[in-house]
Image (cartoon, rainbow over all chains, first blue to last red; front, side, top):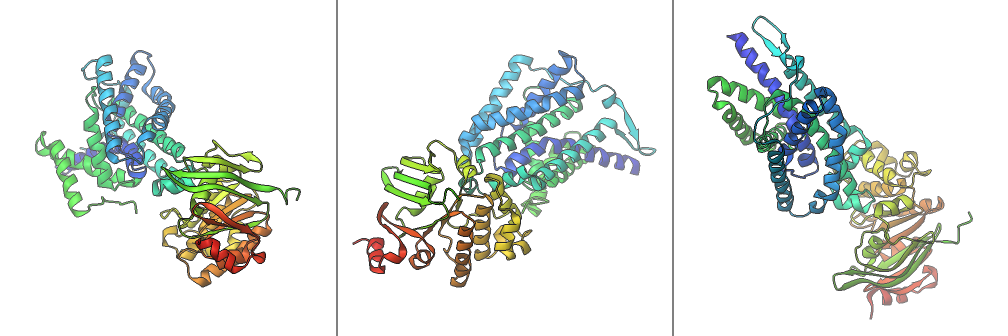
Length: 288
Length: 237
């Protein structure tokens, strides 16, 4: 009984790692740059399909595919921000939401056109079949552990980037006050581009783990956007380590909810989300 | 110094528009290397607009701004700042959530990368070294103004544009800030001081321009100009 409970809790924590990966890019763009990317989940799914093609058609190992994808993801994020999204920065928030909502629809329908409506999965081989025995009744999948470690590394790296690097200072300055940044000669458009590029790198990493962890289909984006939003709001908008906490809380809530009834998995997550918001409206670790 | 008498900044027939409104109307002025030039004028005379146009932050501009003889038309603010023009904006405009040191580091990052480093800024403003880790938003007004000046200086400008650096500060703090201006000048940086406070800015200036409704109504050397003449052109008739 105790073993089973520990098992469930562990699974929940590890699922939280995956949720954190979904959320870090959004935490960076929405939390820090105040740029709400409604297509965030769809870009994760798009990256999953890119990895699918790279591993099946091109026959690459998933790890190689992810490594190749990351620079492309940065370039896509930077270019998208610089030449499309930057046009609506500073305009009303509704415009940002509309433009990225439009992107979301374009991605979903584009994927439907190319790959059809079937669900897919990337084969992870030994990575997803190996388990680690931690005790008599406690086993965890190697891949879940790898995912969690990746989440910790991504969160830690983003935190270092933001608070210990030169570009991090610039990003926080633009986040503080765009007009002043431009006035003293910081080129805010370029900095927004770099920040979105970084956000897209985390989208590529998230897709690497999600494409092996679970099935995906062209319409899976919005569900992942919702999870990402709940994670960053739970953790505290703009706080990198907060999103790890938010991911773990959501993961544990869902896993325990699923114990009562499989249908309760998603609902339990939403209920905990709302409950935390009532107690701590600014999330667990508010940025300021 | 070969450049001592060369104009660092030349503004020729500059007009700036906000919609149909002409905020700056055909202004000519020049600033020589190592010179302090004061631009005085009442609220709304176009002083800040003029500075913004020089730094490349105005959309609709007619006329020319030359820096070291080179026309700045079409250059971005980032390029202009990296070339050696730095602005200390009105109202200080620090990044409140960043530390003092981070705010200063941004000045270096956008600037010309010269001999002025953190040591020089700490020497000018010892209090800032003590407060280097504090968030800029938590400093007093005077300290914030020091950070804003330090940020501008760390860009290693050839010309520093100071917009209303005395605004909202106590007289004793203003005295301290203005005591530093000649030190900055001594290091060879040309300085443009924009102020509503005539007495203060004319006391340190080598030359001055008086703006009224976007036009230069009077220009000269403070010592050669009577107080009455200045007041007449400051307020108009």
